[in-house]
Length: 102
Image 1 (cartoon, rainbow, N blue to C red):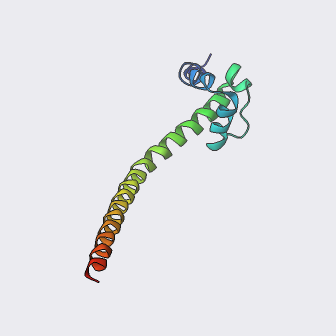
Image 2 (image 1 turned 120 degrees about the vertical axis):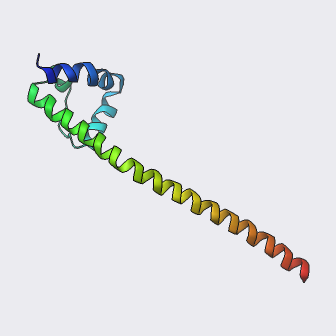
Image 3 (image 1 turned 180 degrees about the vertical axis):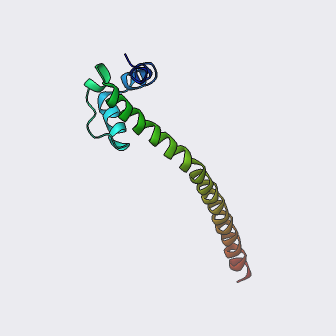
């Protein structure tokens, strides 16, 4: 068994076996592996393992690269929502004051 096949079996096989087959296939389909079969788990060839690992690693790198940007945008969005909530509260208070002055 080649080093890549062994790596696949030791690190990724438990991950794939713990998930339902449909979820496993959906995950791989989402990262660009459209032809995943049970044979890839039970008897993968070295080239096939390289391709699967490459897809998973590329996805992980992409996710990691985008994650900081996503969290920055999420923080900015939360700050904007806080400002909107404060403005709405202030607006409500001002409406009450206007009604009291009439």
